[in-house]
Length: 250
Image (cartoon, rainbow, N blue to C red; front, side, top):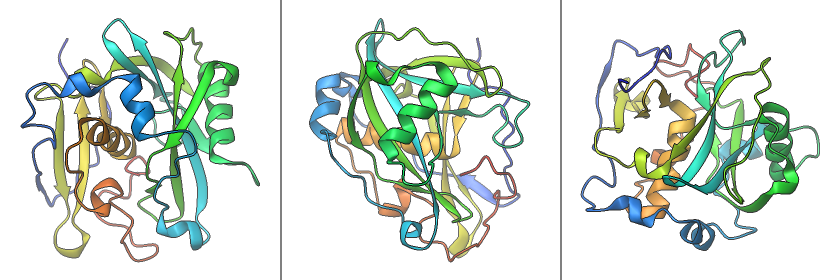
């Protein structure tokens, strides 16, 4: 099966190839992908770097990055969203959604994973957070919560929201040719956009940015500046850079 999928990529007219994968020079980057390593770099209670909009009235959301030891090493649970949804149609993403008033990111992430793929909260051992991600319109931000499951979970998609469930090994994401970066726009509005080309699917945008951050942390390579983890964090309020007309970007 060829790599890449049917996702609609709203690439603007002004774009250029980006940098190579941060781990491109490592001999065996997949060897760093162990649950023990995850727990050491993201211990329980670790708080991610906040988005600037968390103090500007931005609406919080949270996603669950559920990891487990599988046949191909550490694997992560992803979903392919329904093509019938109003936004993010057909996108590959983590289970997650908007926080209810007064809800913690962990509670949101666990609730949404239960609702979307029937991952029971009692089966997840929570760890820490990755750095938070600003949506490209700066009206909201995403808190990535990492959790560990004992063995491959038995999941069931909520077909109203989820078209399919993907179990992807971190080692595959680190393989040559899977990750790529593009620069969208020019001048002050130029931003890195990340892609992971799977067999039959493309992971891009916010989900790819979170995966890139996780893999950089695991392999110990330089993640770059804050804007490389969170490309929209330094935009002026409500600015929409190239590609932002599609809500699937961030």
